[in-house]
Picture 1 (spheres, rainbow over the protein chains, first blue to last red):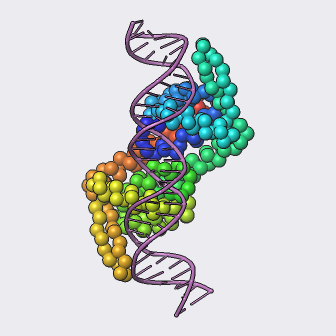
Picture 2 (picture 1 turned 60 degrees about the vertical axis):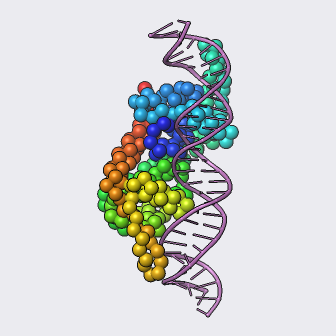
Picture 3 (picture 1 turned 90 degrees about the vertical axis):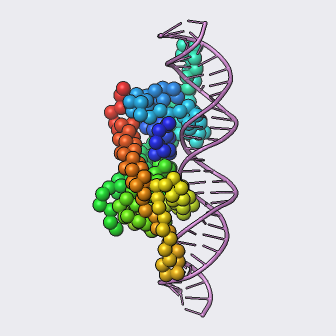
Length: 111
Length: 111
DNA sequence: TTTTATGCATAAGAATATTATGTATATTTG
DNA sequence: CAAATATACATAATATTCTTATGCATAAAA
């Protein structure tokens, strides 16, 4: 997320949503997918991503499965049931956030 | 901003935009206006607001004028020219952020 | 053969916010 | 009238989240 400060706090929402779409993904794959989807706009740093994945796993929102491909390890993550519910929740919060910010930022503000 | 984590990083944008609309405001007024505009959704904490205002002033984005009303002090802030430009910039960044997040979060994601 | 890509990880530090205080005056409420 | 709430500022300790910098290791490309 080496971009505008606004992305602070969005990483978990992004991870969860991508996993909801793709069933299972590994860390490096997530960084590449985000880069591709945003045409380079958003680059998730490893120092942010891996601790976030570990935390989500510790909270029981993700399950992990380690697989060896081409003699290199991949840690595939997928949503647990709890993670699926939390994803829905996070997406609602994002919609609310966007709505709220548009109220604050749109021209006709007068109380 | 005692709400969802998504608001992290949005405070400066909110402050600048409100000042752009209202010409000049004081700190407490900002907290109340945000509360009213968002129907209580968003509550800016003093511990976040005042340091943010001081920092914006230090960076030359805000000018301050102290006035005594009803025997109580008010510190009125308004945008400098530099602050006005930065506001426009921050609003663009917000639009970009929202667009990017919608790409990431909208149904049809396939690269 | 050196760089880049793939793939994970963590530690030090910066930035931003929450929570908890502190000070002071004005107004409302029981 | 006393106590609680509202108005108005401020800062320190702590928490959270991220960036930057490292580190390890293998594979592919230049």
